[in-house]
Image 1 (cartoon, rainbow, N blue to C red):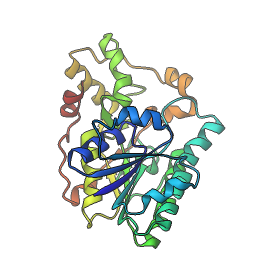
Image 2: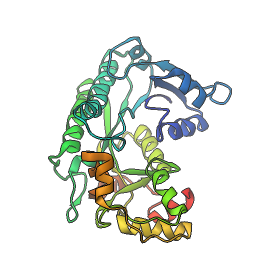
Image 3: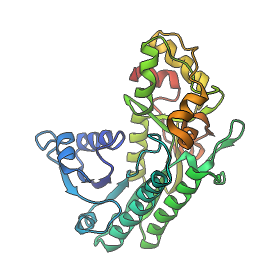
Length: 305
């Protein structure tokens, strides 16, 4: 296959490119920072990777490179868990996803021949937060800021279906790997000061990065996969259970909680990402026949830390 990827130098995208390269596929990487992309994917190691400069929220010559690709994976989007959610930051979070997806769909519309599939990112923030409810792919959208972002984001992706391109929307849970959320949690445990964040009762719906990459490849290659799939492991845990598993794997205590006030002081409204959660089950993902390498959080953490 020839696969175009936005957000390819990120935590998930870089692993995806490695996998596609190892399987002999051609990859077109769209990057805002070509120098960074060339360091991540040096030509000597990645001869089948083409790097193209682009601005995610703007039309441009980069869109021409979509023509002739078999599939597109759209991973672009500003990080939501970093820094305070000022009005400007919230607009950046929304625009990077909504406009970024709009421009990818615009490129597919121009392409001849067109890609047969678009795999577009979304997030489990679509469902809102709850300590008691359980969500699956058929559950309605929430009403908070992240839920609104996800709805507008997905609405842009849905437009590709009018072009005859198959659409798979993957609602990402928290991705576990060496980096991302886990990297931020490891240091306190190393210092014997680890523990749950906030009340510990909030749900933590997660997926191992390798399982996520496998799911993206399945979405690219299985024509029967279409529509929304939760990209989460089948066994979500509460934050207290995650901390306990982390402590057991690292052989460190896991009882010292990080208080709500400390997180709120650091992140403001963005603290909702870690202080509130949702129990999300991947019903359609499992029904599609997808097999998880890491269905339990403890097994996932063992491979990471």
